[in-house]
Amino acid sequence: MIFFGLAYMAPGIVTSTFGVISSESGGVAPTAYLVATFAMGLTAISYAVLARNYPNSGSSYTYVGEILGRHLGFFAGWVILLDYLFLPMVAWLIQSIYLNAQFPGIPLWAWVLINIVPTTVINLLGISLADRVNTWLTIVAMGILVVTAAVIVGYLISGSAPAGVSVAHTFWNPGTSVLAVGTAAAVAAYSFLGFDAVSTLSEETRNARRNIPRGIILVVLIGGGIFVAMSFLMQLMHPGAHFHNTDTAGYTLTVTAGGLTFANITNLVGIIAAFASGLAIQATSSRLLYVIGRDGVLPRTVFGRLNAFRVPWVNILIIAVIGLIGMLLDIGQATALINFGAFLAFTLVNLSCLVWAWKTRARRATGLSLLIGAVAALGILVDLFLFSQLQASAFLVGLAWLALGVIVLAIATRGFRRPVPRLENDTAVVTTEPEEPVTTAS
Image 1 (cartoon, one colour):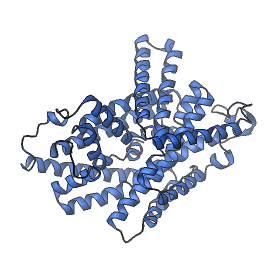
Image 2 (tube, one colour):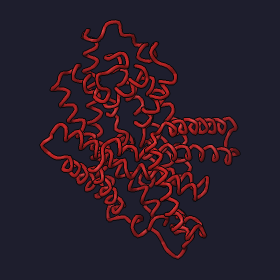
Image 3 (spheres, rainbow, N blue to C red):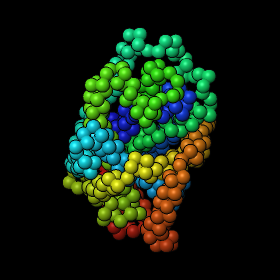
Image 4 (cartoon, rainbow, N blue to C red):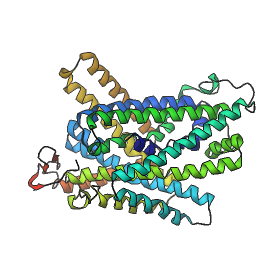
């Protein structure tokens, strides 16, 4: 489960985004990642609290629906679905672009298919196989980071590093400011998107009440630790915030530390290992679609079906088809589709945790209730700040998606005249249509 969450986050992305984070922060990338880890940790705590009390797949869709009402629950699931549908496409597109750059003789569309087809087949064959493949690929990706870190350390202790570099200056220097670090942290926070996907595996995880909350927190802490450690080493190697090309700064530093051959080999192996990211994203995205379909909000005969391997096979194929759209987009256009839903859904989850802590305050010590409420309230403020930092294109796409959600909900509720369909776990039937039995995933 933790490997799925880490694969979703793709820790190796720190080398790709280092130049941007360092430039935005004024040369203190580790500090920006520390702030981002704290910020996302607040929301992770809210997810963990709710996952312990509502151990069902569905993530924000389930939590918000149980606490704030089915209508808001639908929209929480709907906006996060925007991410879950298009994140696989972005992962496959980035993989394909990098592979095409290293092997230009094979066209981009072919690389897209090479990424999508094996991922889809593995996910169709069940979560156990997907878990094994994902685990080994993530181990390879982590191994690449360890080797790269070792090479950078060797470069630094060899005396090749710039003279007069101060460890303290990698965390704060005269060229930075609180505003710069905050702006960079908002960018760095995007690297954490996907930690919440662990909660979609609740119905396929042993002792979900214990393990899902632990997994959510550990994914954020481990991912944040990797981001901080790697950015610290790279910032030591290149103090300051000025780069010839911010987009390729991480690769350039790898070339400097280990040579061109080393950089090319680690780059290629890292790209192949990052196949795990698309695998994990497609697996978790299909399960959120399944829960919404199983409830009858989306057509149950399409989205609420499982195959012999107990996986939502139709949803997996739908996500694969959406991934093909990536052939028509660039990375900027693709990523604009995904950020709106994440931070809006995170805000709703934190609000749900705050309301839940108040409603159930009699169950626990007053101090603990206040602590949970304070963490959730801080999470709301942080997520709204991150939400405000999105590009205009993200708002345009997000608002259009919300409008489509209103139409879908209107159809599901017969023009808002009926309650939002809901699956009762105890009886495995939909409350609005009790005559139709539904098989659960658990």
